[in-house]
Image 1 (tube, rainbow, N blue to C red):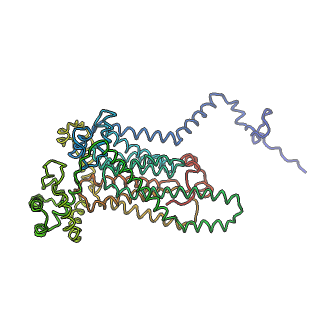
Image 2: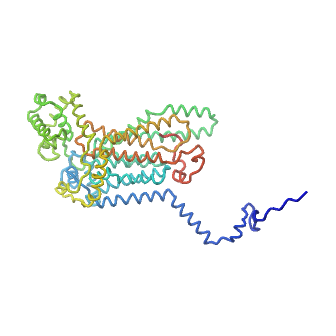
Length: 574
């Protein structure tokens, strides 16, 4: 029998006598290289630490904050203290104490502006607040996208919301519509955080305050707030169900429930979704917002005397003037001075080609002839509206359809240039630097409006809302009919809420729209831009996790760092 040949020494690890048991033996290459120097060992270690720090979610959040802050600083510098029209100039004079407050425009914006000027001494502080709220909302959207598993480049779309032409066009001017829109967006984002981040319920307080402010500055904001309130109510019910589910899981783990009975209980719970509970909690949220608006108005009225102007008469005047035939107007029994004034003003408006906004176009404004002064015969005008407009719904709908169609398919006043500074100079409001127009006016008017005019039309944003709602419904159907596998957190509830809010706001203008200004469409455009960004984040996110928490059988350290354990639900939320 021949003896086996000994193994080659080159293939055998050489063991050092000082190696402890269990340590890997050194190879020939390691022995030849000799002992590792401290400098050589420190370099890879420091490089590894630097890479880990760069990959940290917190570092990326700070990077997003930096790039988000650059734009508001530049924008504020170029457009400070903000652009002003006749409405804004009137609110500024009220905030400065030079005009008596009135309710033609909701006084809460003037009150906030007054407080800001008392604190800072600067009329442009309202522009800083306006741009700041948008910046915070955009940054938080980027953080939410990154922390929920989307690639980092997608999270840059959050701050990019601020530089879209339809957003730039309205952020230059201190419209109450813009104040409303940025308040609604920030409130919605805060509510999203309360759903995703554990123990973030404290953010409900600023969210409710922002919703109250939005309704305060523009009463028809209620159309936009209702879907957001429903989303908030759903979040409350969702939080309650999760807590109850955890308590039930703890109880079942201590007991001896069989898997079959657990599956039956889960299935029955899924079939018995608490729709009534969601409706009740949504109603509570709406009532809290309504109470906040009432309390705010009462607090302002306790400090200053607010003149009652009956601004709703402006809408009633349009309905009567353009939907009631002249013969019926004459025999209506209303005061002759009122009917004659309406009849003559209608002829003037029709000659101008205007079928709305008669108060400003042809009626001669209010009783005193001053802007924002009350219309004469308000009670008689209201009775005339009840008798001759409401009693004839077909001709009312015909008139309102004509007006809404013009608003829905066209747009105007997309950008307020620096040369329109007459009202600002009358009010003593310092005009901003016209240099901003050389940069942004071509971007908004020549590029965006000239090349893609649909971006400023209500019909386009209504179409985007319908598409997103359809995709959200399909996602919900897929989630409810799935096999119960673990899925990552979905943004479809937020996308659905924003799309529904935009759509409700657009069609909420049917009975009241006074013009086709793009500022009336700014909230739908802003809300749906955010919704599209969230949808892109959903589509570009890394694959859904499997039951063992890995993606396609592999762990993802960046994903694990971005989404901490316990912050994502194991149930479908679409």
